[in-house]
Image (tube, rainbow, N blue to C red; front, side):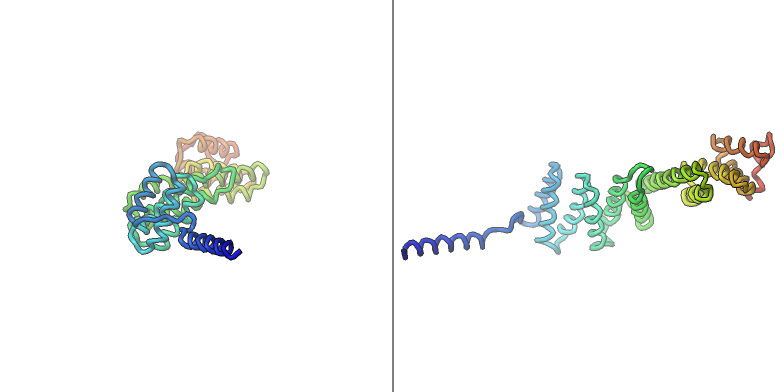
Amino acid sequence: MKNKNLYVAILMGGLLAACASAKPEGELTGSVNELYNQAMDQMQAGKYSSAIHSFEELDRQYPYSAWATKAQLNVAYAHFLAKDYAEVIPAAERFLQLHPGHTDAPYALYLIGLSHYGRMSDVSRDQSDTADALAAFEALVERFPESSYARDAKLKITLCKDHLAGKEMEVGRYYLGQKKYLAAINRFNTVVHAYETSSQAPEALYRLVESYIALGIADEAQRAGAILGYNYPGSVWYKQAYALLVGKKLVPENAETGWWDKWVK
């Protein structure tokens, strides 16, 4: 019996020693250079989950190294390559919080903008990601106007604004169809004032003409038509607005251009 107890004691002691010396599950070993190169190789091979784990381990094990800073940004980039946009944003925001003046800060902002941009939905749905993408791109252009990402950010700002204007137009048209003219006017005015350079602006002005005529507010209908004619004289929306205004005897017939001078001074 004593020999058996001794055997059990030795066996348990060996198991405990093995457990004590075992590495935590998922822990990687190696120098900072080895971990970084391993992570980069994994990312280039398309093994994004493994690369993220390697970068995070490097950051954990060597938190004060220059490689840790690179690893933090590459975590965001690996998530982006994997199209896991919901994870890109907090990773890039963490990088900006830790290193607001870093030379790669413009790129971190660019990744945030692209991630929201990648999640934009059609205008019939919620546009919070569009608004967030716009905010990130505008922050990039404002803070880092000379960065290599600013030019593309400016292009995407235009696209985001056009998307947001499209949402306002969809809601405005709905209200117009329901004869809720004041609600419609608010939406169309938002497009005209907040997104005046968008492709939606000419139609918004035409819809204002329609809405004000429906309410019997001649002056505002004439003003909206005048602004439309002055800024977009060759557009189909102005031609329709002009015909509507002539039909209501609110502008001179046979004076398709120039009549708006007193309205746009």
